[in-house]
Length: 99
Image (cartoon, rainbow, N blue to C red; front, side):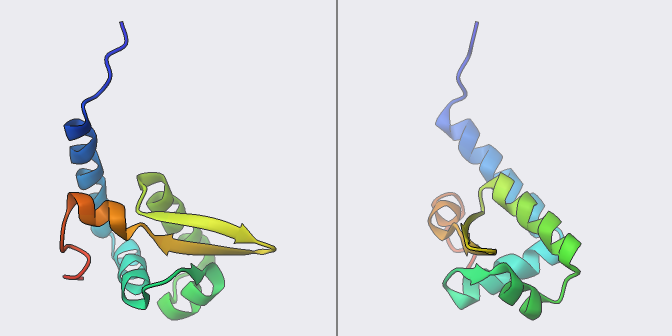
């Protein structure tokens, strides 16, 4: 029997994952930077501002993408990252403004 999770459970899971992501200083810094910039950033530009090793940055961005906090798009050889503010604010209103 396949039991579908309720949307309340999915919301709670996303909320828990947001707190997990923000508990690591590197991911916290990335999310904070993306929020305060207010638009998507290229990974190389983001890396210059955050000053995290490239492989560590890749790991943190993958984690944030898998959680659903950021989206990425590729244009040529560059990847661009955007914070999913709408989704985050829907489950934790005001949390981004407090960073």
